Image (cartoon, rainbow, N blue to C red):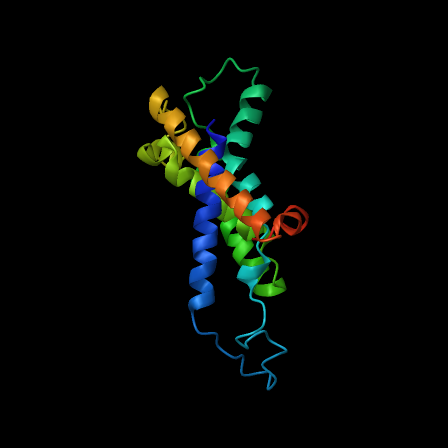
Amino acid sequence: MRSLPHITIACGAVWAGCRLLRSLPRQTVPSSPDPEQNGASRGSPSLADAVDYRLVAVGSLLPDMVDRALRTAAGGRSWSRDQHLLGHTLLLNSPLILAGIGLAARHQDVKLLAIGTAAMTHLLVDPVIRSPRTLLWPLLGVAFPEARGLNRPLTLLTQVAAATVILATVLGLQRKGRLQDFLVSGRL
């Protein structure tokens, strides 16, 4: 499990997506004559501002946590460490995104969407992306093939790069006096 790269990539992807959403012109909702009531004014906070990056970090590790729990429940003898299981399938991760979109649209709550998006980024950077039998399980069969990751030097390099990005982010937040707020709220 390469936790730091997964966390870094998920947080970066969600942050970039939020920046993109903020740059789009907001539409007013016709049923409300007051734009302040529906959050359509430029100055009002958007759903993108409500993302808790602590949840993004947890979501980025969710596929590995699910698979580890399955291996533990099976006594660890059934599957090798190089096999990705249910946690690395679209069957588990797609419903998180869809339910998250529904909650965000209906209740202005982006927590589940943040977790689901982060879990999906995990699939995009894991070797499972090259393994359609796992990704599309059980459509292409019920066996989980082994999926070897990066070699040891590249794994170490990705860990160091991710740690550097995380450290730079923490130092930047501290320099701006926003580290405590991030630790309490999860907002960048």
